[in-house]
Image 1 (cartoon, rainbow, N blue to C red):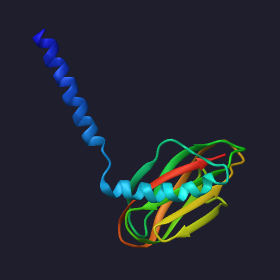
Image 2 (cartoon, rainbow, N blue to C red; image 1 turned 60 degrees about the vertical axis):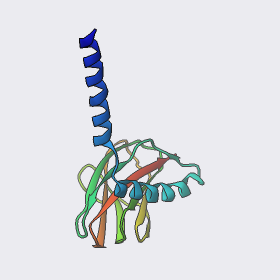
Image 3 (tube, helix red, strand yellow; image 1 turned 45 degrees about the vertical axis):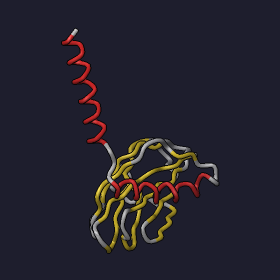
Image 4 (cartoon, one colour; image 1 turned 120 degrees about the horizontal axis):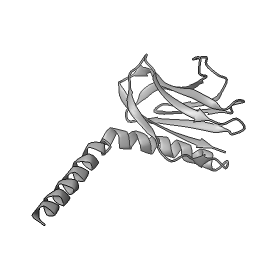
Length: 145
């Protein structure tokens, strides 16, 4: 009985520590709020937000890249927000060979988006980067219809 309680206590502590380690930072939460606010505008046009999001660090002049699986016939909007004012934030969509694809773009200080409709299903890449400004934390969410 004592061993069961000890194991149960250990499992509870391990779960609590895992939750603490997975907790988002304030900068990630701030970036996600900006990204969700932007993505919400696309829901007015019938787009549904995909569950989940990606966060990471971005530095001016460099690009963070996120791999996504997309389906032909769907339309997508990739919305990105940052935790600090990154100047000239941009979002670009690339094919599996790294070729930039034609997309509709929106850019406004700490947020940006790219709209894209793939003609073939498969893996694509979303590049996120500020052209200038300060290093920052980004959050990417995407919508589809």
